[in-house]
Length: 174
Image (cartoon, rainbow, N blue to C red; front, side, top):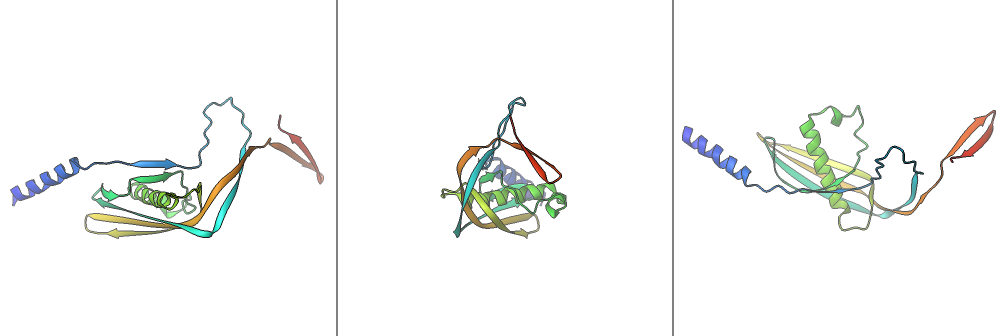
């Protein structure tokens, strides 16, 4: 019995060692400014939403103990979920589970936008299912939302508006 267990553990270790891991992330909505002395006007854009067609995407990931054994390897970065507030269930849960859920949702969002000409997924609705087995879990996410494209990028000077006794004074930013 002891030798069989040893060989089973050894076989599992060898299988995990030869498992190839590849991940691809695609980022959305980013505009960093690294220098503090740079003063930029805010960048504005119009967004055109296609309300006639919903985009759909799905993804799943499997885990054995704490090891990921399968699932999508392409994720959308920069996706924010309106359900994730400081008081939400996700912010108080196990950090491993929160990371797994974020990955499967990011992969579903990527799959929804993949192959389209859209820049953003508007009003995404996620459905998440977790299947629990004795020592394994499977996470499934589906997302539906509207595709949208940013157009007409421009910068506009900021204005300072001061009100005093129902009078407005507008000062352009210099």
